[in-house]
Image 1 (cartoon, rainbow, N blue to C red):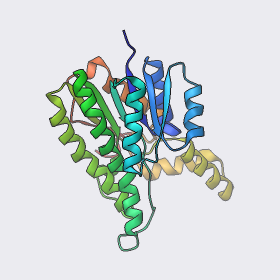
Image 2: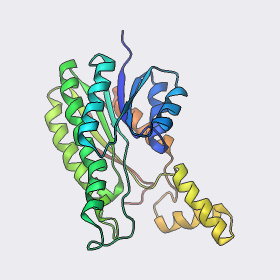
Image 3: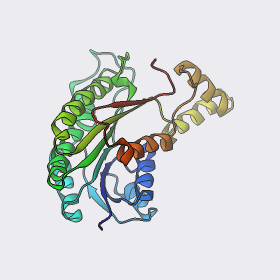
Length: 257
């Protein structure tokens, strides 16, 4: 029997890389979409599975569509899972009125439109096979507004409408569609910022992390790890989640309650 095939965006670093390792460990063959060839191929070479790099700047809809089709050609049309883990933050701290249209569009292109494009290619292929799973990494900025993050928040809110609609359409074909909504995740980029701030302030990194988590709040007073988010994706792709669709799984340590 053929091993399952998962298509994944954002595999080159952080949470996406952890998801790639999880998928390989679960026996999936991988099609990894993105533009950072060196990073994604390094991840691929570390995995004990078959994999294919489908090059695309996810901000480019035509390139993303072409990469999806190239991946389907590699897999012989097989796609059992689609995981959208790519995303960008866009401008930080800029209020509406200072964010340019180009900056706003750039965030929406990667965080929202790329997901629409991957869904548009994946769902018909899944329908033809009689089922499949879609999981997208959203975020808690899609559950509340934040000053200085209008574009990012708008993209995460919009993902909710897109995926709920997709879940309704796809259900008749045996496809589930769900969102994971993390709060801040302790990826290497965050750790680098903490190290830099600790060096600038002349304090231990642990003090900077403690201050950050205190400002963030939340019942558990800590950030999620990439491996924890990958674990939620694993669950949503598994048999136990077969009757879960159109849902938003929040993983933020109890920050939004």
